Length: 112
Length: 112
Image 1 (cartoon, rainbow over the protein chains, first blue to last red):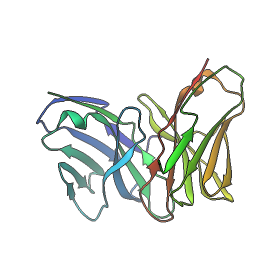
Image 2 (cartoon, rainbow over the protein chains, first blue to last red; image 1 turned 90 degrees about the vertical axis):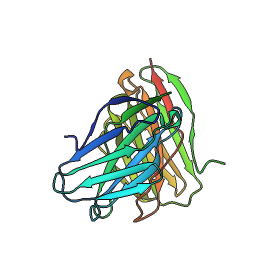
Image 3 (cartoon, each protein chain N blue to C red; image 1 turned 180 degrees about the vertical axis):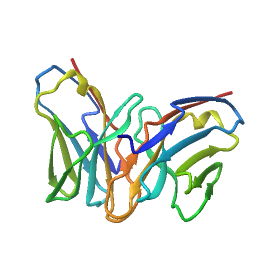
Image 4 (cartoon, chains in turn brown, yellow; image 1 turned 120 degrees about the vertical axis):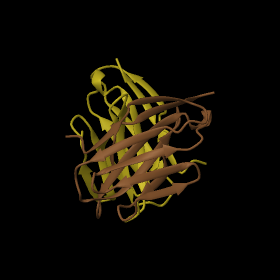
């Protein structure tokens, strides 16, 4: 079964808008929640990550909001730019020594 | 020079052929991973290795095999390629007990 459910599959926003991508998980043993960004023709790269002991983390224009009780986390991109157009993956990892589990990805297009 | 390299970058082959995809890294990481990316399905883990003597199956290992020739090298083989193995394949690395996975540029494989 899918361990991390990501939505929407695709998203189009105007420049300056605030796209929001959501992820939900079931396993409470997850203890690390990163977001990866992938540009066309490139491999994914870590964008920002959060642990469940905090509810929000900001890095520049990117913010993760984390709701432990709802088992959901989301990525917000403030003042989005055409250069933010990419595929975004949420992920999660069990505590300890395990690989990341990825969501299915969201293809974001920011139009001028 | 890139820290994680994959060869070949593109490959077209025929059904039934044996194919090997290679991954090399200069990051000095012990852990290496092979993922497959398909549109709408995200990144799915095929195999992973936490050191030279450690090989583990991932979510979708059927039809694939791997070889960890050295700390820096991790190869993925398709013994008898089939069309539904047409996909983008990524290698990734990480250091022990750290969270960030570093991805290579990918290999686009087409099986006719």
